[in-house]
Amino acid sequence: MSSTAQSNTDKPRLKTSAMIASIAAEGQRTKSAPFGNALVELAKDRPEVVGMTADLAKYTDLHIFAKAYPERFYQMGMAEQLLMGAAAGMAHEGAMPFVTTYAVFASRRAYDFIHQTIAEENLNVKFACALPGLTSGYGPSHQATEDLALIRAIPNMTVIDPCDALEIEQAVPAMAAHFGPVYMRLLRGNVPLVLDEYDYKFEIGKAKVLRGGNDVLVISSGLMTMRALEVANQLAGDKVDVAVLHVPTIKPLDTATILREASKTGRLVVVAENHTVIGGLGEAVAGALMRAGVTPPFRQIGLPDQFLDAGALPTLHDRYGISTNAIAATIKGWLG
Amino acid sequence: MNTTAIGHNTHLAERAYRIRRNALRMGEVQGQGYIGQALDIADVLAVSYFHAMTYRPAEPEWEGRDRFLLSNGHYAIALYAALIEAGIIPEEELETYGSDDSRLPMSGMASYTPGMEMSGGSLGLGLSIAVGRALGLKRTGSTSKVYTLFSDGELDEGSVWEAIMSAAHWKLDNLIGIIDVNNQQADGPSTQVMAFEPIVDKLEAFGWFVQRVDGNDLDAVVAAFDAAKNHTEPKPRMIVCDTKMGKGVPFLEDREKNHFIRVDAHEWQLALDALDAGRNA
Image (cartoon, each protein chain N blue to C red):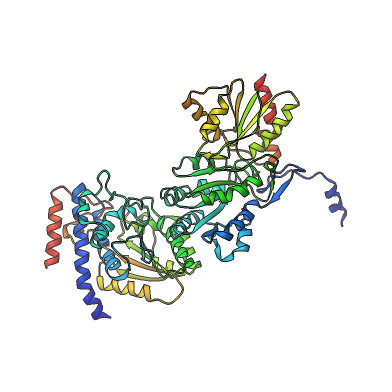
């Protein structure tokens, strides 16, 4: 090895604004490609399942399905509008397409195609869309900070935001069992494994209390539930008792469970989401509470209404207040 | 071939006349509609529904049918006219065209109308859906074909070219595209809004089997559909149809060319009379 190479290995690893970065913390337990593996498993008994992508099979874990079922895999090229239209056509002819791309491209570039060719006819198309919210350091082109707001506004759509590898594995057969279009935010690659330590089973449309607590109720989805559980552990050391209500289905919202939990007196209600504070879980919960006349002290943790910076994910999660430490500090500040 | 075609075409001319008549009657109901387009495409629809396609009028969802996708949803008035003539929609329903709770909304939507295979309105969707349908039919081993009608204006949409590239990539020989080149779109002549010629050369370069015909010449349209069906290369097929807005009603053919031809209240009956005069001539 040259001396230059040697000295490089001694340097601390540079922080990076790479497109793809693992959201797993150092030392965290992970599982590889839960979506791709679960889809292969599902496809064994469901011959109508096909996989379709727009030049992002490898980056959405669909390559595992493509390898297992090459004749049921459709590479549509880097053309998201075509991808969605073709998925509609496939569904019309009896297939159940699992369509993958990045969340930005599904929700922004191909929106009209999802809206008109799939949702309007309530076709049985499933979307698995990677890099949800702020899970890419690449800048706004790849940061899907508004995908939930956009997709949940479409009638007929079911929208889910799984927390970890276990939940993704469980979500895939649940998506297939539900007739109609389902949009899933996808965590890919080595995905953290958290919910196996809880007595947890994913069900579409069901919010679940993962942890009780008397001072704060955190309502969260996606990877923010993982953060919320860490925050609860951290704040327990400061004698702050944090409950965590996991809401993986953004639409239809489990209003009954949310109202029941938010009605328990004496708790600060905090919605935490990996999404802009506009139009996502926070405003969905706020609307449900207001409509029911349930008005606990209410706060939102989420991404600001701005185009986010490029940078390393840990840096950005700190900067925008969605890292474990940042969330814990914010909640402590609110408690005074 | 010619004899057969002529034999067919007497019968097809009558079908085309009745499609035009149905469309004019619907236009009269609402006092408006994309009647210029309906009249220009009637011959192509007559050939599609009464020469080329296999379907069961009483069973519009029959699996073995050929699919007909209307990408240009504003041509719904024309397709309804053909679906009525084909016995898929009862003729008396024509009186409901564009009215509240009608199965015949002004813009074509799949969930409203038997025989309407897609929801149009937003232009440039049809060919992408057709690619998926053609792939889906191959997946199940079906020999049905996917016909997709779209307009020259839709060639402006990038997604149409995504689908054009993809159909050739997948060798979709069960897909037959039909482009209505009437050279009119919302803001003016299509060739001026966005130059799309030479369209045949472009499509051939993209790997399609392409024919260009006078879309109001029934002999030519029949021959083109036959050739598209019988072609043996593993390529998608496109029939570029040059048509005349208002065809069959001379005073509308001569009216200042416009995407939305204006017809005054008293003119609907005049148009029907002119159409009938042409039939009897």
